[in-house]
Structure formats: structure tokens, C-alpha cells
Amino acid sequence: MKPFIEASGKRWPIAVAAAFLLASCGGSDHNSTSVPDAIMQVMQKPAYKGATWAMQVVDVDTVHVIYDLNSGSQMFIASVRKVFTTGNALNILGAKRTHVTPVYKQGTVDANGTLNGNLIMVASGDLTMGGRANPDGTVALTAFDHNEADGLGNALLSAPDPLAGFNAIAAQVAAAGIKKVNGDVVIDDRLFDAFQYRDEEGFNVTPMMVNDDVVDISFSPSAQGALLPFTYRPMSAAFSVQSTLTTGAATSDFSVDLNPEPPDDVPKCFGAANCVGEVSGTVPAGVAPPLTGAYPLVRTFRVSQPSTYARTVFIEALTRAGVTVAAAPLKTNPVALLPAQGSYSSTQQVAALTSAPYAQDLRFVNKVSYNIGADVTLLLYGLAKNGSRSMATALATEQSELSSAFKITPDQYHFEDGSGGGDTTATATAVIAMLRGMRLMPDYATYVDMMPSLGVDGSLTTVTDFESDQTLAGAKGRVYAKTGTYVGLSTSQPQMPLLKAQALAGYIDAKSGRRIAFFLTMNNAVFEGFPTVLNAFQDEGEIAALLWKLQ
Image (cartoon, one colour):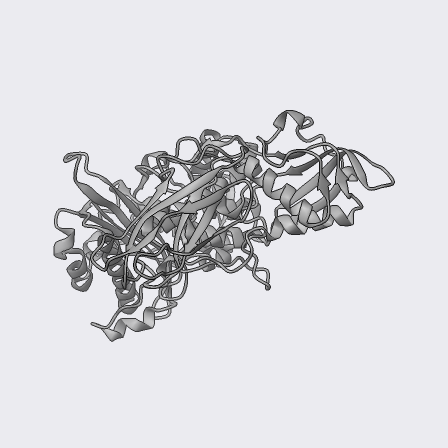
């Protein structure tokens, strides 16, 4: 018997051909794919009155459809969109690829170590620039990432120095014999076209990032009536923080106000002296910060001009390394001094920062749902695939890839960016097709591993409360899935806030020993504050645990 089937001019392995044939025939008798009562009881809780659910569960090996609910409906999926972005990038760029951020001299270095010319750092799209590097080479993550501190009310900061990469590059410049730069320092951020990030007017994402394009402020507790002590990072003349945040009476409001106020307003003073963010408000005495239940209390300001900020940070790192720079550290990044793109000579390179393997970047994006990182990931994918430089052309490139490689047609989804912003939608069948298709790719094991793990890490770290049914506790560490949350206003009742999407998709190594792919999303529940999201997280974690148990 032939180990393959010939069709459409191609040879298909029998297992693959059978899988696609089964999928095209619907996978199974839909009369046998109804959702179990235990799961329906979760979906029918009072909190979800008027909401809509969709779900599909498929055996990864046989493509047998196990459960199916509204699988053909376009549903909000929020950050579950990242399973597409990171999957395609992993397939094209590979898990072991690294980003190299080089520094070039433009001019000559005399006998005294003076560079009579400019020093140029060329951005590579490295998401962390060494600022999250653990000693073992992995990227440091926390259960509550600082990128969501303002929206969620708190965060846990990772331990590594966010300027570690810049310090390392500066040390290399000094080691190359440069003691003084008589010209200027420039950041070349032309790798792809900068794009506006969601609704943050005045902030365009570039391939140069410092501390994920935010400045962190960490507050410690104080006595009633006293200012809260604070620190901020990175410490730089590019941006400083002032605070009048005070501990109030136990009955006072928990109110932390930022000026400029994110995300609608961002600091626009980068490159000028006295660029300051202001924090004000009160925190009640004896009341722990939200989310973490303990101090420090973390807030962030957006770095709205990443390359200008990075230039200042780099000059300061050079100074610490003993390299004097004649140019003023505080001014707009002087892009007019850049040579023609791609004209750099290896003989002029004086330093370079090499990132961790690319799988670490994608792990970062998925584990903590790093939105800017996902958007950059889409741009890097488009560049590598066919030279696409803009968000629009990268989306078009991805659309072609999804159609050809995964048989997912454009009418099955609507994507506005790489991270799941806005009214991002997809059908359950489209998400499952992506998850199932990744099984045939070389870095499939890496793809599964970079998903949050139930009760273990990433955005599923805290979903472990199965006290009402301890038979579900065995699901811990057996569910690998991307989360997605979308809060917005109702279109029919404009003043009514909704949890427009709470979604979850990935893989489960079931109690039976088989692996299943699953997708579920709940759309349009009444939003009654942050507990609405936490409860939906827990409920979807329980559904995933039930799938582990039942299969």
C-alpha cells in the first residue's frame, strides 16, 4: 500500500489526507456533538444572561469533532487572535532565530579614541532589548504584567534591569576603543513603517523598544496623611515622575490619577528638558492594592516617542561606560543624519546585542498577552515572508497565508491588527483550523509550550480554584491556552459597558491521554467591574478543566 495519496498534483501522507477529508466532511455526526450538561451549567450562570457562547472541541489526531456550539458564527475573540499571529511568525521565522541590534560608526576614530562622526543603533524589532533577560537566557515574566498595570489596577514587575541591553551595547562601544563621539547618536528605526497603537493617539509603534515602551512607577505604603514613597524605572533624564499620591482615611476612595492620562493622552514632551509625568490621588489606609493584594502599587506612563527616548537612554549608557558624547542627550532623534537604508558596512560595526531565541519573544507575547509585541510580531512576519512593511500589507500577507496553508478563508475572521484590538472576530472553526494546522509544523511543540498553562504561568496562573470539584484539580498544567478579554460599550445601549469577549483557545492533554484542541468564547455579558472579568476567567478555566476530565 502506498504511504501517500496523489491528489491535485501533490503527494499527501495518508494521515494528513484523511484528516483534511474528515474535516471537509464535517468531522462527525453533529447530532453527537452537543455540549455536556456540566459545561452548559457554567455557560448558563446568571452572569451570562443575554450573552452568547461558542465552542468547538476537536481531537487533534483524528480531527473528530467532540463538542460543537455556534462554531460557524463570527464571535469576538480578543487576544485569542494571537494564536494566528504567533503561529505564522513561528512558522516563517523559526523558534531559534535571534534578533541582532547592531551599532555602526559613521566616520573615523583617531588615536585618542575620538569618533569624528555619528554612532547609529539600528533597531531590529527585538521586543525586550535585554531588559527581561534571566540568567539562563529566558525572558522574565510575571503573573500580572506591567503592560496592563493601568487597566487592571496593579502589576508585578520583572526582576531584570530594563536597561541591561543598552548597558551591554555601550560597554562594547567602549571596548571597541571609542572614548568620545564628536558627532551625534541616532536610532535607525526604519525596519518597518511605524503605526499608531490602537486608540493611543500620539504613540506610534516602532522597531525600537525600551522597557516595552513604558515607564514604571512603584509605590510603597505610607502612614495616613503622608505621601507614598515611590521609585520609577528606567531612570533617565528623558522622563521623570512627580507624585502627590497620599494615603487617605480608611473610608477614602482608591483613586490614582495620571497626567497625562492614558490611554487617550500620552506624554508628548520626549526630547525636551523637564519631561514629567504626574501622579495624584489617594489610597485608603489599611486597604491593599488591587489584583495582587499587596504593595508595591504599580502604574505606568507611555513612552510615546520610542526612538527619541532610546537615543537618550543609549547616550546615558555610553556615559556610564566612559564614552563621552558631544551631542545633547535631550533632543528629537535626528533621523536626517541617517545614511541610505541598508548601506551599513560590517567593517563599521562596533557593537551588537543578540536577543534570546525567537521562541522566547513569542512566549512573552502569548504568556502575558503583550499587545504591542503581537503587533510587532505581525510586522516581522510580513517582512520575513515577502517584505511587507506596513500593518495593512502584513495583514494582507497573513490573509494569503491563512488561505493557502490552513484553508481558513477571509469570511471566517476579521482582524484589525496583530494583537486582537477592536472588533476582532473569528469563527470557532477558524481558530480550531489554526490550532490543528500547527500540529503539522516543525515548531509545534514550541507553539504549545508558549501558551499560558492552567494554574502554572502566564495569564492562567491564578485560575486554580476548583474547591467545589476537586476532581478537576488534575487539569492544572494540562491545559495550554491563549486568553482574550475585550471590554467595551454596547452598540444598542451606548452607556452600558459590556464584557464583549472572554475567550480561551488552545490544547488540552486530557485525562484519557489524548490531546484535544478547543476554542470557547463568551460574548456580551453585562460588565459590572473587574470582578466580572475575574469570574469569567475562572468559569472558562473550569470549562477547560471539565474538558480535561471528560475527555
